[in-house]
Length: 298
Image 1: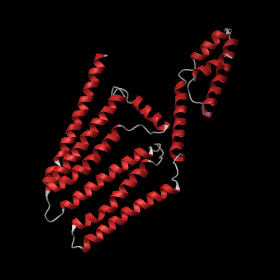
Image 2 (image 1 turned 135 degrees about the horizontal axis):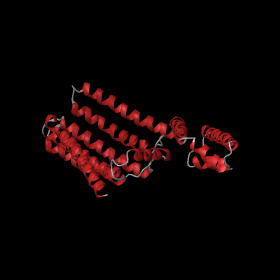
Image 3 (image 1 turned 135 degrees about the vertical axis):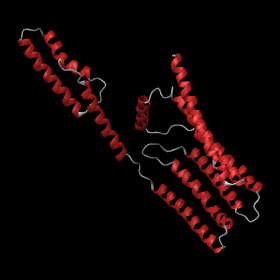
Image 4 (image 1 turned 120 degrees about the vertical axis):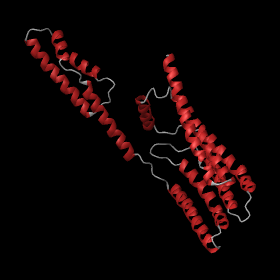
């Protein structure tokens, strides 16, 4: 009883696996045999038990390896065996949306070559296809269960889809205006403001207020990674703030890039991304400085 209780307590908290149970049984038998030898030498049961245990060394390291291998095996099965199957309705939806998008691309190419390489007409002919296809693919993608995520609520996914459709409408329409013979920069920007800007803002708001849809095993893996890299950021709230600042920076940079491209030239717009990269470095520096100050104060 004393040996069995010692072994059970020693491995308390380890996940039970056939390998670990065999290992525990082997340890118990070795302890029992060693205690019998020591008792024959005239030692009491307590003295024999203490000496036998001291001779074992750090056996928990082996158990750690066994437990880790089992976790890898379980996670591997999750990756292989838990892929959700698409329903017939979703398969039809994906196929139809992709078909509409492909049909629009072919139609715009035909229009381009039959109108003397007129990009304005070609892009305009693409507009009725890319908007519904993009919105539908966004909605279907967000409401589809994956290996790592549960499906999003259909109402929220619908707002995402509408926002993406509005953005695509504005971008396509402004692009066609850009290739008009008598293009007016004010008219191009006038299309971006009522369509692209609201769509981007709505999408940014949805992303920043998004709830976690990860499955339990993914959450466990994330917790393991966070534990491994503990101390890089103070807490998960600080990491979330870092992501929000970065997201706002790049959304703004992309918007400025589009405006400068339309008003001037793409060569003058590209440096915007250099400033965005510099902003990323400044955000990272600020976060690291804050973490150092917090660690010193503690």
